[in-house]
Image (cartoon, rainbow, N blue to C red):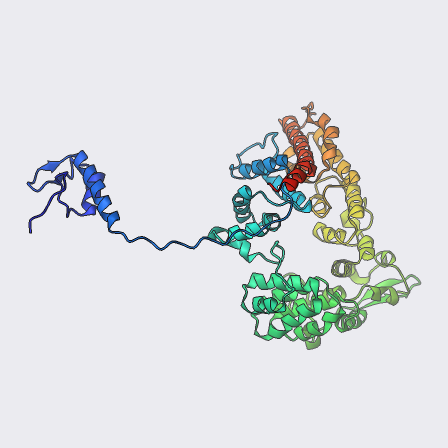
Length: 551
């Protein structure tokens, strides 16, 4: 059968691949041929491609229409004020701009303000603008620290949208710290999610149920405990920290015989945080056989005789027999016994002495550091502010000479047991006495915004470092914290520090300009934070939109 040609002269059975090859290489190098063998030019090639495309499409069968998604659920929270909506769009747009190298300049770092903005908007109960939900979910996908705030702010519409895009699937697997709260009111739904849900969904369910009905959560966990994987048992057990009480003791005692060492250790830690538990009393008996008052010579001191072995009963109660590299066995065992002992035991053991009096007693044979470090860990575990105060001592005392521990990490943990106002005052005193070089970790546990005395202590210390000509980049971490944590009302008081100071003799070259730039950025950031708070507090627009049923 003779080959027929199109109106362009190209045979109709010319393969599509030949047309593509001619288009890529050019008709001069790979010409198309007519039936008579004549070479065809570019116009004929394009015409043939158009005809071929129509032929291919004409042969297609219509596709079955896809079912539209279910409508997004309603979100009855009030809409953002207009100015706050514009601000959020600006923050999210700035997030996509890559940070520049070198000096930061005087402009605020908007990406560092997103968590604070989201927390403030969430605390006021606003709903996220629908048009910004994709950008919010993209931000949470890129930064895990934003996820709890983003998911709470995005609400049910955010979860609905996340279900339509695989890249936002993390929102559907939000853990217990995220915003996704399982419905614990329906027992059948609870059972089904516990048996069929993803691990993160089960952790979230257990946490939510624990807050509502601790006994029901414990029963749910016990029903499948023996069938769970070791790493899952560990995470589930950790959820019992919230609302831990004597009612959990029997379950935790059973967990002391678990086949996983990590599970056994966590169960022992939780039991030791219950001062009346049988494990805590067993550990107290062991510890008191090692630590005793010594009344020889008239003055009372502390005598220590560390354990000589770690027997099977001690190991069952969570004592790890093998110490880390560089630690002696006996001191390692002693520290674990004291750490797990109820702190009230020591008052009775030492004739009613208070924690403050006990930490000042001399300790024989160089055991003071080990004993005090164990008391620090016990105070943190048992959330005992009285012991924390005693072990911290006065903030003016050098860390190496304090009654507790010189470790700033352990001091931060002790501070976390104190009320926020007291914590801020202690850190302010520490900064006034020792400067900022050792205060970064301590500042990290202080509530935001920093109380007046703490904020003033930080600014005064920065001013002193500036006047001394110190390297400004040595304080960049503290300056970054100040931008996020100082009270915005401090901006006007700080404006005087934005000028470039005269550099003292011996100062770092160019330090004055760096300090001026850093303080300008600090002041502009504080003023921006104040503006953001004012925008979120202006709910007049939200009320009007709510009345009109718009937004």
